Length: 407
Image (cartoon, rainbow, N blue to C red):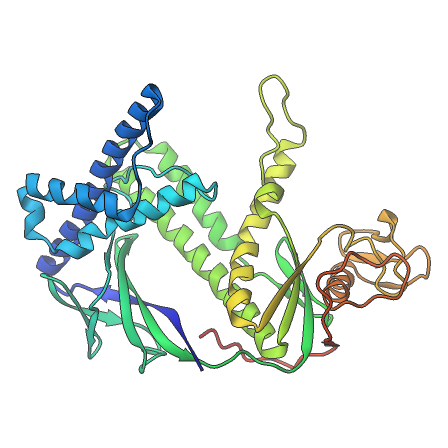
């Protein structure tokens, strides 16, 4: 068995107003340190840009030395635990690294009305369903089903506030069994609102229309209310609550689909999609305005709400092997004869080959092509570009009514 880190999220209950206030104060201190350090970092970067000097370091060590001087100058910071407050700068250091590597946006200042958080970097103490936060005391943890890793070692904990509720995500170091190895491969075609499998199964996304309509209603309500008023603050809370509900339902669906695939085959083959480029805006510029902007915006929303990236990330750690293949022409190529033509796809869901007459679901046909490309199935005209060849048995059926296990 290998030892890996698994995260478990609990509801965190302060139980008393005093403990809730102390936790808010600690999270506020992390926000204060983040903003103060970011302000100084922006100033130093501007000086370096203007004078052509060397850029200031954004490592955790360098930012941590600034925290020491900031703590000496701010008496109330010395009343709070050192390590959790200082660790806020580890997150900022990681944010700067992602920014300079081109993998994320520039670090931004944190607003008081945003979602606060604090990290316990080490020496996490959990006992009988409670967690000890340094200098604040014990807080109750709640989760349906309890802790799925009772023998795991708690290495780190992250406490966050979302929509007025506190949550605690604990990172456990646990023994993980090797993923299923049965020699089977499964092709998956990700679409807006569903995924199609090479077995012929189509798994639709959980219906989110009702929740999205409610969110839009709350957004209209918030837009009508006066800035800075309590009524607008309450409406903003309702919008955030609706967004959280939608996100949790999407994540649950991704967990169930990825677990079903991992329990069925040891290898899953998907398309190598550039989601960021696919969901870029078509608005254009003032000099060169885009076309079909409204339709492209609707497609972008549908793609992003389908959780393609989230599903791919879950498959990467649940399956033994995740293979990516080039995406072009998988939906236009006939799986039966290999004939490729844009007219093969008669509609969004119907596929009819102009050469051999093969008919079927267009998305399932694409999933079969993805599987053939990933498992090195060649020997016909018009074969797709291949990934690294592997000897795999094609999967043609799945167990009826698979029981998802999202752990």
